[in-house]
Image (cartoon, rainbow, N blue to C red; front, side):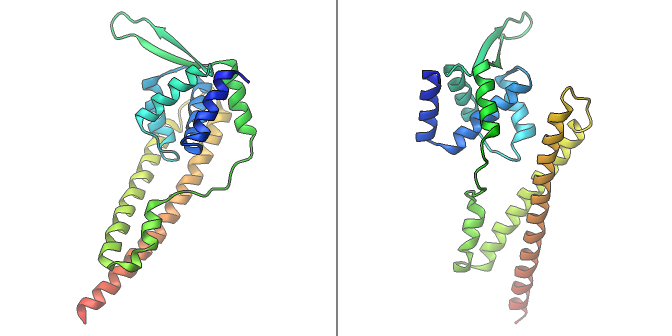
Length: 205
């Protein structure tokens, strides 16, 4: 393995570990489809990946910088006359090999850190009103995510594509996430109705 790649992996695994490692492969996966500028990557990430994996702009650009340093991607300056020059990234053979290896690895169990559910777990130690605020906020968040997924499907799901096999699995991921969000919404709605009914009964008494 290339020395810079060794260093890159060690830095990520000993630091923010799993989240940064996964972001690295997301970047490689996006660049596998076609070369992209940093701006294009941000746009694609927000449109297609954000419902499944959160990352800020600084994380994305830091990851790109580290991938380039590790020689997993190339960076080319595209000179433009009427607008600023663009830096376009593309996969190197080492990057393709690393992405292929990751895709063949076993997937870890889906244990996640969820601050909403963690806070909700302890809401029995506060008031129903406080819990209701968290549940209503969470409901709005779920609805926004569902709306974004529907928008993405309308905008991109029916476009002609060069890689239909790739699109098939991207839409499968969307089906998983949509089912998860709808189940989440159903549980949230029931919880809200139950607490609202209890508060209503208390006020009547």
